[in-house]
Image (cartoon, rainbow over all chains, first blue to last red; front, side, top):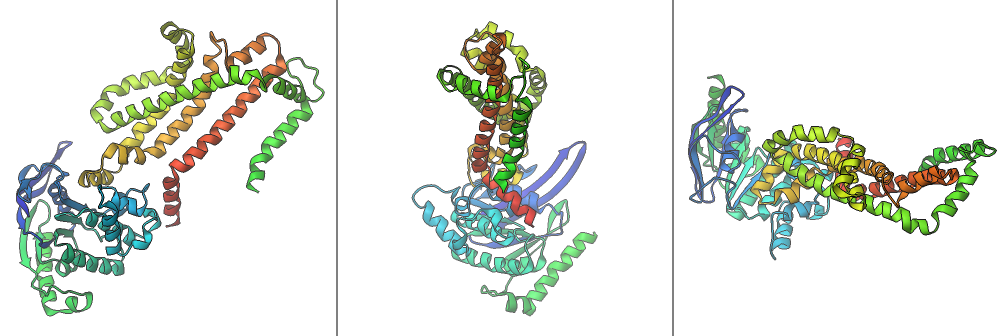
Length: 250
Length: 250
């Protein structure tokens, strides 16, 4: 569903060359949930922007459903880290969710999506009247209503408090299971990556390469208490942690 | 209480003018009482249709053209750095030319009719609108632009104009007061009707109370237009003021 082949990105400007992405190749199957985790400043956002067609790679290619990405591809939605800046402050919550939609299904899709993220009551509020966690729920609802085949999430919970974060993580697991969407989730949080994903791709520091790919063989039904206490969770977490430590020191 | 504060100073000034001018024998500074009598005699009659409305119509036309031109050009210039670099020196020059000196030139080009007067108003009003629109468009958040690209939202109509609206409104407010000034000035040259024309006529005919009443009327028109502007601003920028108030609370 999503293929990244030999992706490389070099920023060139003001006499300085910064190699953000060295060489990345990976693949997501249809309906797979993959987390990308790496040390901060490892070019995760650059990678995501290349995949979303918002940034042109220096070399290599991205394919979504077999088609080469040259601009934002059809059927791809993004939930950005900066929820406060990705919602339209002059539109009410339901207008934000409905803005990308058209046709007779528009009202129904918007309503369902808001109900799915638990915000049916807040439909007439403006985004800035809501807490950070609720704003990110609106952004998630907008992505759900868009009915994407591929959903990209760029550190979506980096700016919310721990309790909200746990709630949103479970929400995302549920949304993914219900919609059968292919999900690429970028985070710097090792626990979050292992808790959420079916597979975790560990990235090196910039210029970025793939250090390791591991299958998360935890049961599909996960919850914050038992999953995080399971010995296998600790084991996987330890393996990712070791890689990232190596990446930071080398 | 608030209404009282708004009224207080104008009331004091008005009363002061009334009392201090009451016994005036000075031909050029008649008592306010005389001016008010002249006001009623002069302006409550045919002059509304003959002079006041044509002036306001020209102001309205010039201001509307300046708004459309300024916003349209501002969006183009703000979105395309190459265009901005090319036109910026020319804009700086044109902006520095005081619009009243254009009157003789515009008379040569457009004659002495309404067209010339409207063009004078346009030539002054367009700059603050244009420059503020450029700044507003340039400051549009990159995350919002990415959001539009991913979700297939037409960026200019749905996002750029709204995101830049606080700056556009600032420019429009400055342009309105410039417009009133130029409305009067354009009528002081080669005119047969209008407020500026009438005030000058009165002065030349030594109809001093009538002249003063014209100045008073212009002041009142300015206040009324500013109040109207605030009304429009409040509805256009409700989201912006709400968002700013919400940010202050956090």
